[in-house]
Length: 514
Image (cartoon, rainbow, N blue to C red; front, side, top):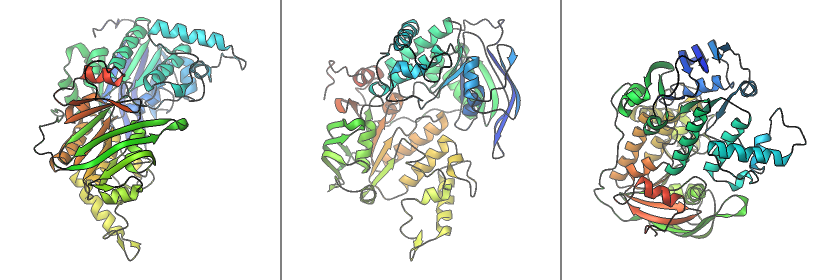
């Protein structure tokens, strides 16, 4: 995207010498950043580089320990996101902040200072429709949030900010849950907002998207600003090198050496979702030893319920699940673990890891009932520490400190800790749900290498993801899930981003049906 901004115009946003620390650890150190009117400025860096902290300072969630923030030339001191919104600064987070049982229009009006208690539904609905048409964000103002796809919910989050006339928007990993077609539509919306004079901070780990939509790129590393580039003059490899400080090329699939026996056999599985509706509708598939089977789909099409049903965390309505030939349909999660299932859930903290426990304790979970962790019913602290030391070194888990809860680690290190625990237990099947979501390029590569190593060692890997780049890079076969059913099966050689995107959107009239 060519730089159509005017550097001579006053800056929309200017941060100077920003410093912020948590628990004595510096998250931002002497960071400078600026944003021009009508510009998309990409903010990049590894997990833990300080991007989220900087964005949270801009959005009023955190206050800097020192440094200045200027908005349109005037110094500001936001004490809350409410004050930032009132000044024209808003953020769309990865995890949406919407009320599911309210309509689109009601969510737009919620908390708006100029909307009366007895608001006119028709006026809000008309405003939503007008803004949607103006910026390419079509959505039914009368629809309730729970009825919308993830892509449509994201549009509502952006419409909320536009309804408040925000002119500085922060988009945090906005394409993580979108199809390629939805991502391109979002980029067109971003271009329209910039043409309207608004400015956007775009946080992403997808370097091709950064090239497609941004004017400039600022890179953070270890909390400091290491450089700024004009996007049109930079190659993705140059940006990646700035982010990690070395040359990096993401690992990709190699032809599998040997595909063995069936290790996971699913037949006619049906699983209930939210609101009493059936989310998984009679799916059947097999995973063999030494292969990665990828399942693609837009978030909200049954992937979550499928993973929970396979892991034993949600009982099936019908169908069967067999691990290594043994029926585990009605088995508990613990019993499935004992039968050889390793599970990497999408929710790293809370489901995958206990946020308040130490790294050593988390690395010992799932093994703590047996020797050497337990002796005569008593937990052996030394065994936990010994195992943790080996895994922290072997899997390059950084930022660990004795006694500190694991939640203080960056996303990439959390994921490495979770996968290290799972792959070092006895197992024959790995269930991985969006294992690189929100990770930087270096952490993504580390996770990819671990999954490929699993496959090459004879483990059957089921990879459920919304990231098509990840699926295309790792999968030997691909299935596409749409509204709880499989609508296509493709080999790695047949699959393309365009074809997968169409199938994910429910278009099955192209000869790819299963």
